Length: 323
Image (cartoon, rainbow, N blue to C red; front, top):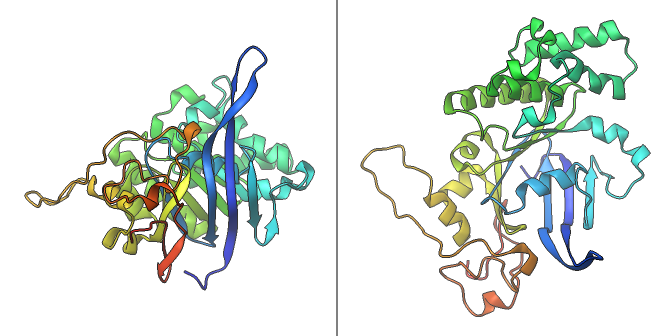
């Protein structure tokens, strides 16, 4: 992977949400949703981002796309810095970077026909005439496995899987090169999940797409992603190829996550690593390693010094004192 072209580079990204109190709504602290994340995403790959609910993975994806304003750090796309540049200069990058949401129904206007909803991207970003727009939308519907006549239907007339196909159609409408899939299959039945994953892989090939695939389902991630980034409390815990991570996890948090995956072979047992306690409050961020309050192998150093992000073998990074 290291010899591949870097499409997206994130350096020391932080996203803090202010905590306000009192009648005057004074800021009394902050929730550290994303805490000093640095990562490169290679052209054509699928990079998985995993972790428990509340670990900051969705906020990370939204901040990259500018849906959340970053607190610190830089974001570069195709070698150009896009963080902090004027809004008018962002238009060309917005066409290149899109998102598939977990709940597509929430992003659709229930009173608007699907065809009109899909046309909006062309109205905003292109000047092609109406007849051409409508034809392009019908082609999009066919490409994601829906019928052309669905153009006239409304969101409530579709199933969850069909709505997600509409969400995918909207994401690829402007021929982007980078798509954030935010829990794109987690709300779907298993059989429908498989269909949507197959569609995403097909579109990746035909459109030369790069995915940031955010999920809490490590079974799905194993089958979909080339590399996997493990996040804990907004920070990076481990990064490796999918093969490396599942075969030889290094971080104790990664080991705990992987031990929770159900075994497909009946009768074959494995030891479940159970973590004590809950995810700490990001508004009261722990000192040292963010995982030390739940780590089964934590030492005194772990509670005082934040571990460095180290490359243990080619392409396999971890933030842990005890590895």
